[in-house]
Length: 464
Image (cartoon, rainbow, N blue to C red; front, side, top):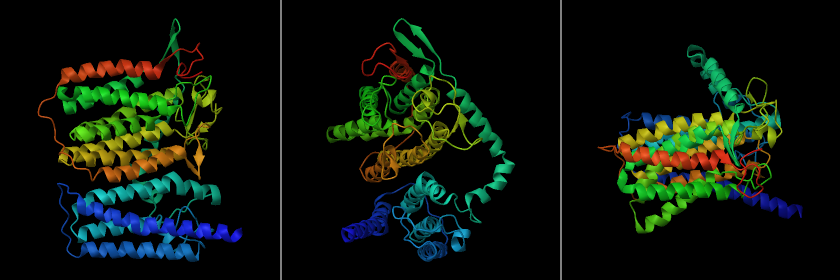
């Protein structure tokens, strides 16, 4: 029995190593050679090869020290037994990831690969950040009680900037704002109907999101916009029932991944008959981070997507009994991670990135792929700090982290689909955009902020 178990683990390690050492790098090379971008690679002569060699040396040294000092393999699924803090690990943060990213930059410059430098390498860096912030650092804290703080680590490098720009003060202001929103839940009754005060944010998320899409596309695509918006909303309501379920206090949960799955599936089906649908999906990708960031304010007030326990002064404290933090998770009065705030910041950054690529003129499918990858990275990190008891955990990862991994890889595939090129609209149809926005403001407000608390039927209640 022990022999069978040992052979199974050995096989898992081989498959895991093969995927990350051969399959994924080869796909990244294929992606870099298959895509084109309207940028230029810096002319550094042999500088690219020097950078690549430096990165390779750092990576190999990191693997060696992890094997010798850590007594294990460089695989986060099969972690080493000991924490390594000296040597190369005392200089560079996560030297295997760090060295690999540096190597990718150097190789892209050496081969003058535009897609390699401006698309594939950033995607790789983002994936490494997600693994570190969304899994490895938390694992190290749990197992060893600390994480390494190398000389060139983020905490050391960022100190001057934190002091100059008073980033600590800014973060404290944001925490206070988030805590105020998280304790602001209240409602009004109109007969059997209850209107919760976050209706403004759920409405603005749907209204502004649909308005942006209409501005980008124009009246010609109104039918597709309406269809996909409704599919997204219905998908969120249906899929929300699967991982979360229905209780007497919450019978109408909404799932972001349900919305994403619904829109993506519908888009791929429509693509068979109407290839131009990628233009519509590209507009959805541009609008989604804005809608998601606004919608997260609704999450703060509602108490959904809330964080796990954290140290005093590092999170927010919720005392409102109607918040899901208190009503369902029983974390009243204790500091929790402000995970919706993490999501807001991540979506703002993602929106800036997507706008940059859209303005420069790239394929719609590149924008769509970048959204899926960027949103997957953001969500993977955010989910690691969530504390909702209803969220399932599978092999040390929350179920939504697995969904986020799927988003990341699906985004890598979508980029290869043929499509048109993004551009700034010559004329903007403000009238149609306003009308669309008002319609979906009302629909989103009703769906996500109005309920029937006296009913026991499915989909009747949003909170206690």
